[in-house]
Image (cartoon, rainbow, N blue to C red; front, top):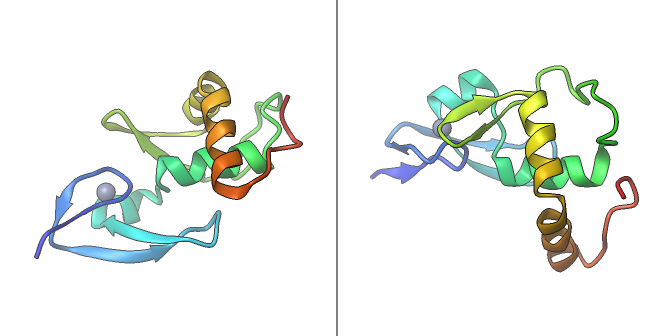
Length: 105
Ligand SMILES: [Zn+2]
């Protein structure tokens, strides 16, 4: 049986269910994403929006990584992505969790 990696979207028949280091969720992840230590972009977006001061360019976690548009990305690109999509991410957080962040804006 093949499933899809929740981080990079790759079809894989060798997959692991992994708990996120950021939020109380778990997801399917392929072997490469396990090795990269990448978190799904959706989890990263929400966690960063709720927990991180985006004015600070210092990585909130030394090994924070995600996957976006075909490549693994580090903090610089994650921060830029979240800043670029801040409004829609905050709207999603509000819908999902019923509150909005106090750390940004
Ligand atoms: Zn993957």
